[in-house]
Image 1: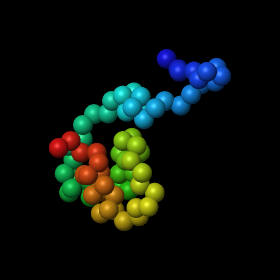
Image 2: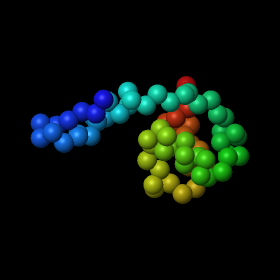
Image 3: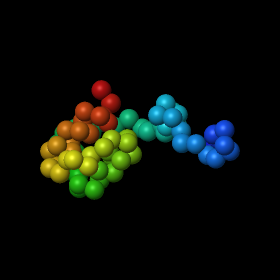
Length: 73
């Protein structure tokens, strides 16, 4: 259900609400599997997990970010 502010306008969900609203499946990729994926697939994974990747350009850095932020440990 959409939350409204005191002015009656819709308000943005809090970070906690955003994290609770999206339930993503756990990822179980290896570094080798990720390295064989296309760049757009890797960036899609980061986007789905709401991980900023704007400053990263090299594929190994993207893979490492996924391993650090998105892979079930």
